[in-house]
Length: 325
Image 1 (cartoon, rainbow, N blue to C red):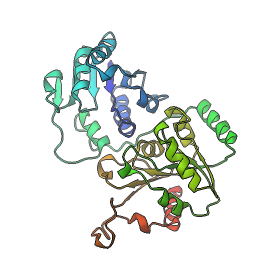
Image 2 (cartoon, rainbow, N blue to C red; image 1 turned 120 degrees about the vertical axis):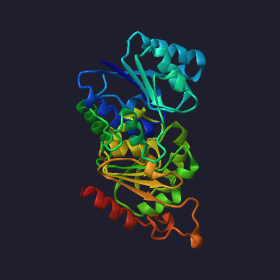
Image 3 (cartoon, rainbow, N blue to C red; image 1 turned 60 degrees about the vertical axis):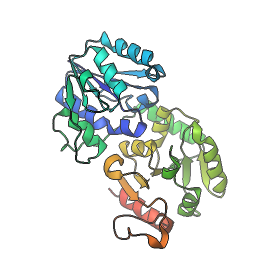
Image 4 (cartoon, helix red, strand yellow; image 1 turned 120 degrees about the horizontal axis):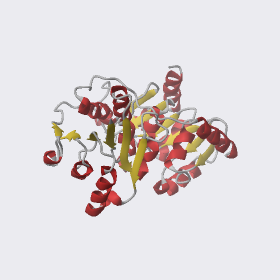
């Protein structure tokens, strides 16, 4: 049997697709499973024993002609099933052109006519990983944590790379997000770290290079390095796997850290952790208001933490609880 999965386009969502792929393997242990994705998320699936092959695309999916070509590229495989985990019309076009015997996805953007099996989107709000599992015929009750795989060769490389940085056991900082509303401010990071004797690595994309430098300059008294934009996503993943723990904004890197089993504190402001929060055995999500409502805040004792009242002691306590798991 040959099965393909059209991956989500965002890093965090791609991590949340891993339980779906794991259950596909459980359901079809002898199948060939292919991942169809944009290049920038392909690193999430590398080394995964549940995946036989990854088809990644750079700019092909940005145009109609490119979308057609991408669909035709996979047509020669003669797929039995092709799932789309995105709700886009474009993904349904690819599935339709692929010639797969069964094409499965949720009803959205009037694309049902392009699919052989169009499933109604659940009315009840559920975590995104559960939504993906819902395409596998009522499997939303499954509890499967995402897992990213690292090879021994990759781990060896990361150990040597950390040594070159002059570090031994760094703590990962992921303060940046695509949205400023989800980014942790420099002021918060400075207050949480205080006069710490620990080592810290600031992670981020090429777009975060300047922000990383600014934060670095604010933490001159500490042992901190910024590697924003210096490594590919895959190499960043490998380096994150060696972190003692991580402090993460609502971002893809927070999902990666949780899926690697690294103790992760994830801070959510405008996002909904019940729908898009990281999943793992060593994850704590801290929900806070954005913007701060000050004395008019009505969220006291409602599971929401005031970010401005969160101290270094609170951070250390939360981390201690995670590392004891």
